[in-house]
Length: 139
Image 1 (cartoon, rainbow, N blue to C red):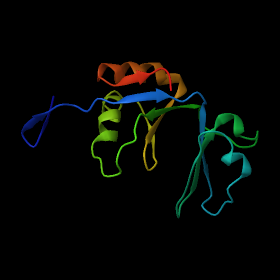
Image 2 (image 1 turned 90 degrees about the vertical axis):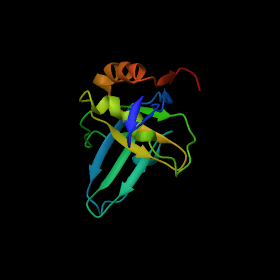
Image 3 (image 1 turned 180 degrees about the vertical axis):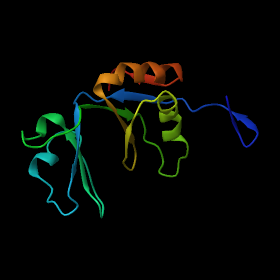
């Protein structure tokens, strides 16, 4: 239970799956063209802002000259969740944040995705389990 505005409310417990492909996160100049390699594979996220072009794609897509800090494991929250739903992401990342696990979050219309560095994914999934979140082993 967690106190919210003086009332005890149950923590949201979520189900999630680990996507099989390791991802890379690449930052490019805001005016860069979207490279062809970025759009291949089952999971791609492309975000352009005034400051950057951010690409999340399978790590195997990267040409040798493009670098990514590390490989990331993508955890897909088992939605769909309404766009208006509140507390979904915070319920999932709070146990990670409280234990110093960095995350990279991507939201789509129906689902949310949390990327965790590959080298610390075992610790992260243990923390998620202790918070009541359930890893789904099959799709």
